[in-house]
Image 1 (cartoon, rainbow, N blue to C red):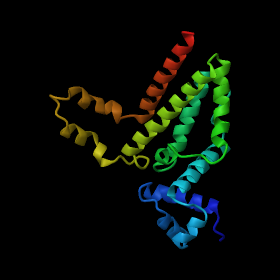
Image 2: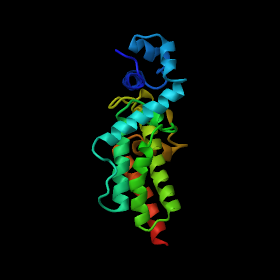
Image 3: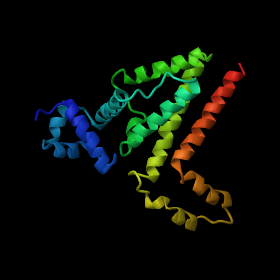
Image 4: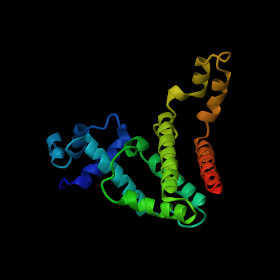
Length: 213
């Protein structure tokens, strides 16, 4: 089979789910493709360039499905739905948020995804500066949340033993840190609910800023 960029990228995404980001190397990808590692350098100068393309393909696949950025409902409903969809996409890949966060998307998919939310916000009365600030805040919250979530659950349903509640409780001095001890059930418990709580707090704050205008 001909070795092209898309084949390398999709092989890398499949391997990511098996070994995780830290163990994903060009040499390992080449072995998976049954080629010599130098063959990959015809397509990618280094691992970071490959990661940029992986993140781009993740997002392109995401947008090619059911449109996640809905024009229905209020600006807050649209943004909430968008961030829930983004979180689901990131959780679909092992270390998905680490791969996606901070990478350079190489085509217009990110621009396409921004246009509708920014239009919803500006139509609601936000200035463009405020709309951009609002969008980037919830976007950054979502990526950061999933990075932390995937540290606790590197694979779906498999908790890292370092975050085991009983183990955490044993190593915390309850007299010195009673609140930190009690916080564990909120910080490392139901991530779906925690994400929703944080998202609604942020959207509520954005809404307050609009009402003060």
